[in-house]
Image (tube, rainbow, N blue to C red; front, side, top):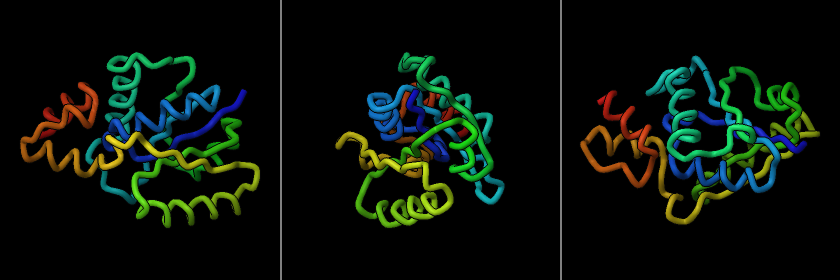
Length: 162
C-alpha cells in the first residue's frame, strides 16, 4: 500500500488544499492529512477545531472516501511521522513560484533527515492557486464572500469566529 502524508497548518483548509488532496489520491492508496500543533505558532483555530473542520469539509461537505484519507494532528518532525505511519512520501502544495524556494529547502532537509522518504510537489488547479488561508480569514473578517474558496463548513466556522 502506497501511503503519503500531507502536512500543513490548514488554518483553515481551502479548495487549494483540497485540490492537492484529490490529486494525491490518484497517486497514493492512502493519504494522511496531518495538521501541525506547533506551540511556536499563533493559530486562528485550535488544533481540535482544525481537525473538526478538515473532517467535516472532506467527509461531510465533499463526501470524500474515509477509507483513503486519515486526518490527524502531529507535533514531531514530518519525516518521523512518515516513518511511524509507513508513509513513503510527503506531499507539498505549491501555489506560486515564491513558494518553491522554501519548499525546495524543506524537501532537501527532509531528504537529509530520512533518505527513504520522497517529497512530491503538487499544484492546485489554476482557479485555486491564489487561495491562501490568510486571505480567506482576511476576507471573512471584512465581511466578504468566501464561498468559492472554502467548503460550507469552513464558511460556517469562520462566521462563528468573527
